[in-house]
Amino acid sequence: GGADVNVISWNKLVGNLLATGGDDGSFSVFDLRNFQTADASIPPKPLARFHSHRTPITSLEWHPTDESMIAVSDDNGTYVYDLSIEEDDPENKMNEEEAAVEGEIPPQLLFVHSGSEMTKEVHWHPQIPSCIATTSLSGYSVFIPSNL
Image 1 (cartoon, helix red, strand yellow):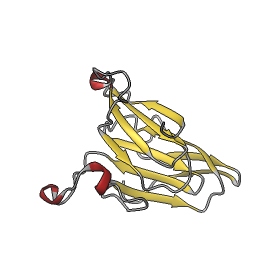
Image 2: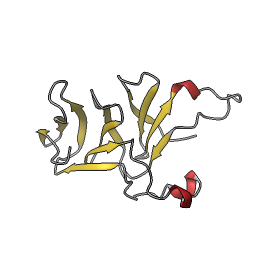
Image 3: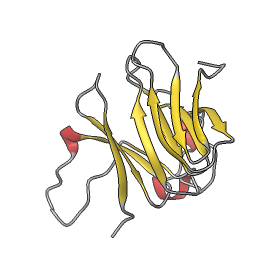
Image 4: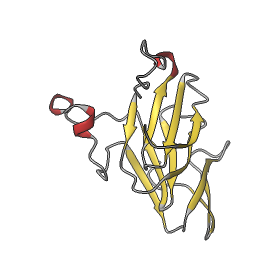
């Protein structure tokens, strides 16, 4: 078996995309059109899977107006990914298991907010583009990443 899934988020702009975050610090994006497999004992294969977190994923949420952007939190911080960004050298890509080096910084990672203790939730503001609010043991934060 795999790690427990802690959190899920539907993409409100692309209804067949579902993101999941787990205890093992990974998060995945699934296309529900391809969710079933012929053999029920084989788990569905995600479109994308990220292993760059070292603590459990505590929250994730798709951007309200950008279908490829997602905010993810773990105990150590909040992270913004743009899933439309491709690898620089797809010719040199190994298989998924070899390429997924734990702790490696993926090119899709655009922004990191750290300094909060035990981040528990992350949410995009529904009307202010790129404004993010988080809750944590040390309080709450509201910020707009400088590069978004």
